[in-house]
Amino acid sequence: MSMLVVHHRVRDFEAWKPAFDEHEASRREHGAVRHWVYRTVGDPNDVVVALEFRSEKDAREFVEDPSLREAMERAGVEGEPDIHFREQVEAVAY
Image 1 (cartoon, one colour):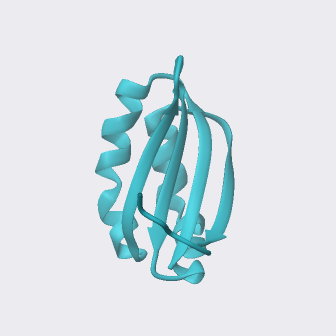
Image 2 (image 1 turned 90 degrees about the vertical axis):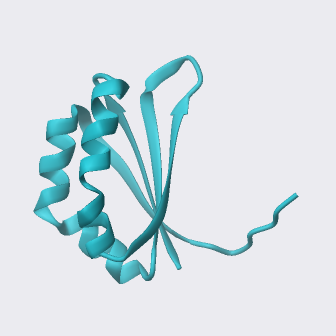
């Protein structure tokens, strides 16, 4: 599995979230299997999204899909997102 981590600022989290949800079909088509959404305590418009994909190739193809840029613009993403590709090394539950 491969992880795509996106950090960005949005104009309004409450407006951003429905637009994010509407883009789920595209994420699934590109091999996403689950996601997490985080926001900074004290600043709800500072958002981090982590998406798990079957492979790094799938994650990279998703990032290159023009529909992602369009969805981000509609959702009110401000500036350029900070995008990272990660691979899981360990997972421990407590």
